[in-house]
Amino acid sequence: MAHSQVQTAPVEKADTSRAYRNYVLVILTLVYAFNFIDRQIIGILSPFIKADLGLDDAQLGLLKGVYFAILYTVVGIPIAWLADRYSRVNIIAISLTLWSGFTAASGLAMNYTQLALARIGVGIGEAGGSPPSHSIISDLFPKEKRAGALAVYSLGIPFGVMLAFFASAFFLQGGSADWRTVMISVGLPGVILALLLKFTVKEPKRTESVQTDDAEKPSVSASLKTLLKIPTWWGMALGISFGSFGNYAISTWIIDYYVRAFAGLDITQLLIAFGIINGSAYAIGVWLGGYIADRWGKQNKKAYALLPAIALIIGVPALYFSLQVNDLWLSVGLMTFLLFTSGSYLGPSFAMAQTLAPINVRAMSTALFFFVLNIIALGGGPTITGIISQALVPSLGEVEALRQSLLYLIVPYALSIIVFLWTSTKIVKDWEMAESRGL
Image: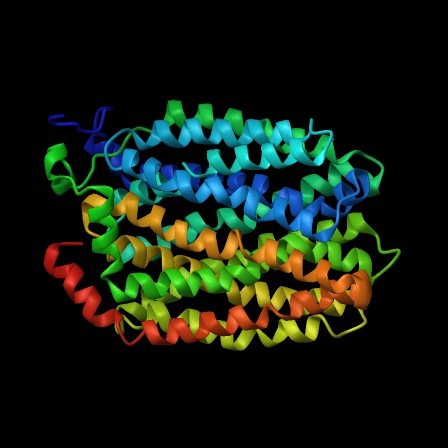
């Protein structure tokens, strides 16, 4: 095929003003928030689903991890191939409609198989969210502001998790309402947001070198080979993956742990508390990670890898102590500190995935980045934690089994620190190579 360019008209110069760029960033951040509402909600509702459908921890782990991640990761790469060639706005709008619809459909599931199929559907839809969004942001924001912009976009994670907790607290009414009501209620609004995106955001003009013939665009295999030859790209991908292995496991299992370990707790109060924590401490950590990396990175490019390593070194010990104390709110406070520090790697990692990638494979770079991230973290974290917990239940009981399984998360966090430190030794050379071909 010849001359397959972006199918919608390029944005006029007036539309690339600071106000418009920020509007697009806000809309894409809201889309990402809905991504995490629909991703997180099953972890929040886990105790209720477990009781209603009679599931064990291994089955819950599969629902929270592998079933969601398996097609999410596989479909992401072909969608990114499309996003490097066709309208990214249309791809995001269609994807948002799909995953929101499947989330609502989860509320109609009457057994484990139906719920598993709905979760697979959510994963397919969400695969079309971040790669084209990252590509759009990279076209709208210059390289020196990219980590900050992508850190703002990453605020969709804590804000989405926050809204999922708040919605659960509101609709569950202390446990008297059905978990299915929550699924339907958080799924349907995403369709409205998809329409807002479609009719108010224009496809941005791509960087000039991207406007090439299909023959000049690298194939999927060529794109992968190019990216995998960049040590910093690979290091940041593994660093965020090992760290997120822990974060995904905690976010999907912590409510189960507290419900089991602190019998008689006020579930509504706990859900509201975690909503506030994710919307404040975690969100501030995410934003600060991008802001500090951009500021520090002006003097020292190593900052993009050193900052996440230092933050995790400070924060990870809080995980161990939070699982040892016998006071609920002290444990929650320590977990809050971990969330604050661990959010720091998102902006820098996503920025490197874009900055170090050749311009015409930026969406593919994000897709491969998320492929690595989601196979290890999203597919592994919740699932392996559930499997280990279930294996330990006969000897330790449900409370201690889950506690021990969560303690093992110190291992992937340690691996994340090691990888980020290693990456800091490679980043200067890779940045210079990226500048030589044009950022």
